[in-house]
Length: 348
Image 1 (cartoon, one colour):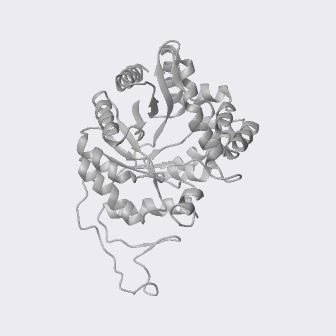
Image 2 (tube, helix red, strand yellow; image 1 turned 45 degrees about the vertical axis):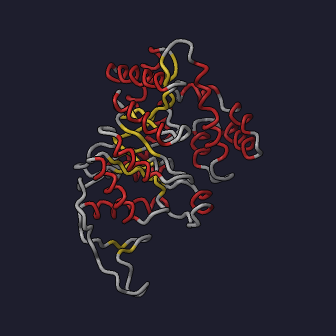
Image 3 (cartoon, rainbow, N blue to C red; image 1 turned 90 degrees about the horizontal axis):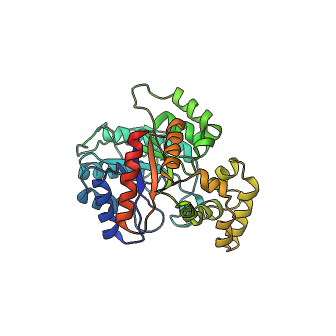
């Protein structure tokens, strides 16, 4: 199995990039660069391209509403060229609070938009003269709109590859089905190997039946926090604040996709309680309300035998790349964890 991780920002760009370089030297396969409502992801991806040699540089994720489909294609092709063919375009819908509250763009039709964006990006990378007529995007703009001077164009530069791999952060059944049909990778959150088939099995199977047989199998990125050794179980609680943020604080009541996934695992009562606590400002109490069974099921922190079992369980469920957060107070500790994980992955 391959290994990926999310790039952190807390220590500053220079130190974070230096850590990615060190992790790359120990076998890290993919680094995800997030974009929320701080600095953009693409600037950092370009910087990573200059500082690294082998690691795949993936946006994790670029919201589909914040750039035109053509610009998404140009951006991915640019990072791919800078990195010598190591880019991955990670896409996702984000949520209404960010898209409408920070970008001032209507949050509508995420599944339909994603399909059209994927189609447009692949036309751009192949340097086809771009023409697209869809429900959400029409390129060129029709003559009765704008100046009427738009005409089909093709990309003037030559991409390193005719296709940049596309990963989609999908949670809802229709979105997961479409991801399995069209995308190269799937980036779910709150993925529990023991519950994956129950939650997403039908959607994945339906999408795979429609998938182009010439396209490589879907990559699945999932995992959790990882720490290998005796007596580390208390470190599992480090994931509580982030889980509480997503389950309780992302979106609004009745419109929180992460809360829906959490509830679907059999934690309906807890999902409501966590949201109520978080939205009332009781973040610590919300984190404490997350059931220990959920924390334990979504972690790779524990003795070597425990982590090996979890890796095997994830692999059996369809995960192809462990997406992990490396436990450790220092870089040397995190590097050690990665080396141990790499060894276990090679054994399983």
